Image (tube, rainbow, N blue to C red; front, side, top):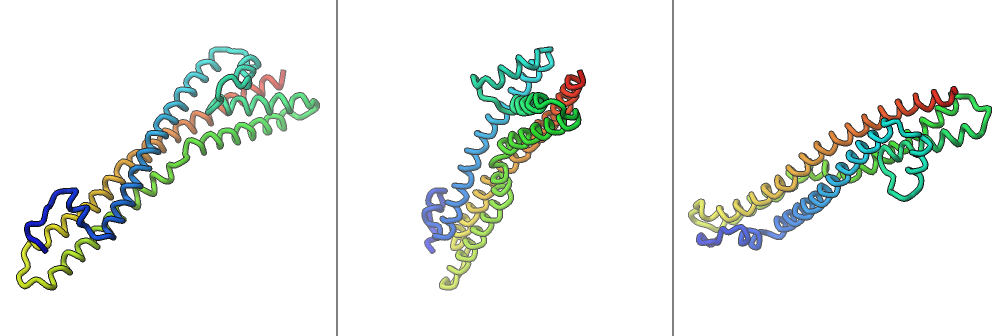
Length: 226
């Protein structure tokens, strides 16, 4: 091994073994996809929280439920989140009530099922790609460690034909191997932080959705009794 080896970052990557380069490529792709999903999920969850805030303000302002349902179901705007739960529940409530001679308990159970199904679809959409972020956060350090171990093994194997081994002989190999570890952490840390943050936000939205469904069910049950 040449003791005057160029130890620049780019040189270490280009001169690394094929396996280490493959590891770096996999980690780079995982990091790129992670950041793509992170930004997409950031905007999606912020939009869901904002929509929930606006709809709750309108709902609890005393707006007529029929007028609110007409606006939501008109198709003029995209219905998501809490509005979707309201639309699904009120539609089912009106449909079952029109059938007549149906027990109130049956009407409310059907309404709750419709809202729960809509709620689950909305949460599934918000949780999309979170599993990928969790996988990147947990697996990337080990992929990087694998590249590091392989690079260090090659660095020490190269000493077999050297009469007098010095640190200068193994420094380039160890340096290129440690890049894999650094790349693994670079991919893992943002993914873990984003996953924890988004999971917390989705859980809070799920709690708000559950509370809304219970309160809306109570309102509809009072209407059904009148």
